Length: 296
Image (tube, rainbow, N blue to C red; front, side):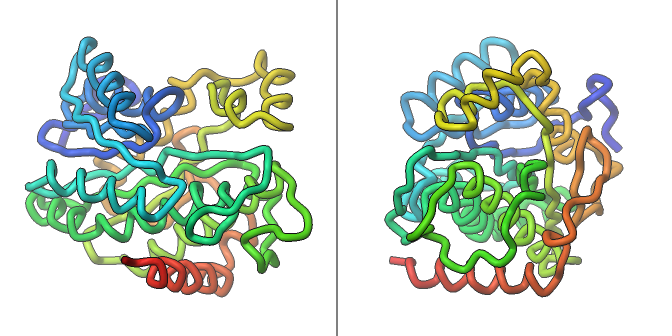
């Protein structure tokens, strides 16, 4: 069993990890920590130039980092990212951290027919995970221990509307509501996926980083920018926000843990709506249909 590298991370030697959204904030802090622990970390940004710059900067502080890129606002972008990941993970993938997220202040529909916030925070996460399942299974088989999927969640999932039917918001759009809905939907899908993959060699858990002061709120604009400006003094830094993702990615005690929601690196309880199996299966089936319809 691997030992601890620091009080908050365990050795990752020989493991290959993909962390999405590593340009800044929690994603970069997660990637940096896992790289220092010995993992080969695929660092993702929307364009290759940015991803390469992140990889170079992180490598200067220790570790091995490989740049990959793709715009997660569309399934075409997800497919491009998958091609790159499969090209450089010939021995399988051991950890996928779905960290990338977005919250748009103005309504727009993605190329795949969803409001953009839901497209990035849910559909891209589901599609990327699905496309990399074989690589994750290969990694588990070679390592002799389960591979892991870690999905970034948020406390705002409790504000999500489980009765939302139209994922385009044709009549009324609210940045905060769309973000909350996307996190509720993604979390329900996380639980459903964990049930579906039970015993397959791939575990799936959700990480709630808490209130964190990063560039996310500033870049999002709208009400989220205001919230971050007002509450910044009371928010944690990116390194603290990353501790839950890091534990879920690296702690050998969690090898077989799946279908959990973790806050402050400990098992927690999410909203009742997110834990409703019927709701989760509905989201799971609907998501699979969208992905299937948009395959080239």
